Length: 179
Image 1 (spheres, rainbow, N blue to C red):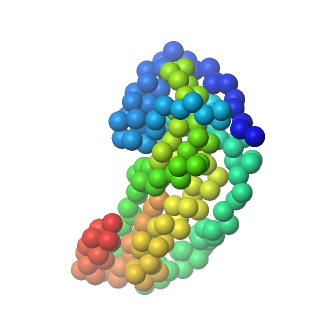
Image 2 (cartoon, rainbow, N blue to C red):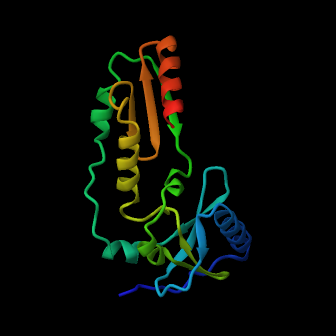
């Protein structure tokens, strides 16, 4: 049974942010207008730089979702791999989730309701219960040739570790070519 909740109230200042972010996501092909009976409300989260990120409150949908049990790595196990390394780089795959397409039959479930209409995600949105596991699985498959040799992945971050700068340059080059 589709779950739909009324939009949350937004401060007038949030309307401009909402409109801009909807346009940006639409221009990138991440969202499209929707007439789905599903619908989650939108809220804004303040980022470190003072700007606001639009977030969808998918709690009701997440309650109905069959959980993907793909194991996320233990942080202490990841740190053990850095033994003997002295040079590190972190690559954050910004908006990495939006690189994944949602299956056509699941797109209507991602619908969110706003003052400016209803929209649905064609790309994987944040805050879906299985999004981290799905993205982590993809990253591990893509990075498999180098995984645990000189790099680790944790959701949308890649950490590259090396003994020295020369080796690190080779490792970085390999990962950037892979991506």
